[in-house]
Length: 104
Image (cartoon, rainbow, N blue to C red; front, side, top):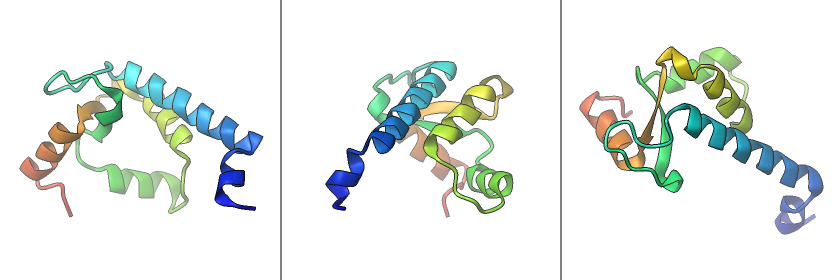
């Protein structure tokens, strides 16, 4: 099967739509705009781990297993009020990473 044929299979389309719905729900749960500058274009919004522990959290929570984006967004929605996550635009997220020395 070609990649194009795989990407249009009913199951693949459903998974992509499921993930997109959870991504929209996660963005809404986190305020729908950048927490620093207020930018609201969803194409540039990113979910940020406030403590900068995203890699450690994902490795520890899944015991090294990969998790689908839909499952990740679902987790973010459930934890939205915990203060662990915030929505930042790409620029503010990278600035935060540099300021806090979170980059590897």
